[in-house]
Image 1: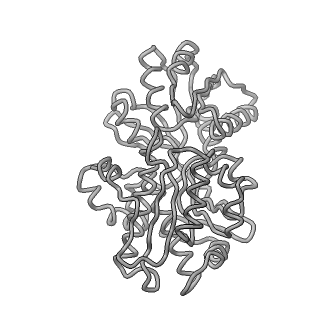
Image 2: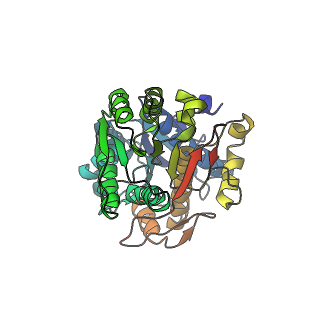
Length: 372
């Protein structure tokens, strides 16, 4: 049901008289489409909640989503369109390191004075020093890698760790972080393999790693290439422990290769567990996603990220006051120090754009659920 909801997601979530435009550029086609649609769905769930309650100061939200197919150039073009033609007051929940970097380097955000709230990228090249107009809700890949290596090397005594990475800024950032984490422990990579970001073909990497068969392999990959690697790796006789970063969505891994291959995959997460109702905003999230839950589907971390990014954006617009402007929203975000989104704390100020250091480690069970 969740897959069909995402696939049928209307790319414009608006009431009859929409006054406040919030833009989003994500892949709704291509190998990253499932994650892009999930981000858009999550944002639409929260905007729907606000519109149903009367909007922001009586004005409805018009959620404009454009497909960039995970193409950095299209992400920039979409952003320009959202700014110039759609007159967006803020941007929300973008996907990917390469796309975000291209948008940042184009200076389109700076020229328009518009805030981008939340991206899926935790690359240091995106976060440090970053762009003053990009507000990050998630911890970085360096922090995720440190947590995984601490578990493997410090707690489990694993010393032979290899990596499979996507050939782009995301992969380069993750591999650099892994090498640094190992070096601190006087260890070196046991091996590395790369795959093309456009084709997502990990078959060669799987054969290479199965032959090497180190104690553990860290996957700096996205969902489908990671899933295909796991199946090919295990089929070829690979027995290494497998760990991946937060861009890998466990539901998509299971949908692609099945529970029999997916189980045992460890994943770092940068947001609370989507079914942890002890967290206040998760209870709201589940209420707004009631139709998804009734279908028996799990709520993904990507849907949750889109939802949380939308919530922060709306709160900033409210802080900007009636007749909000881009400058007002930006200023409001910079004042959100130790801000409670409902059990999830973010903190921004005039100089800091890294809102959270939250990290959690999970693992796919034989039944296709997550254990923590």
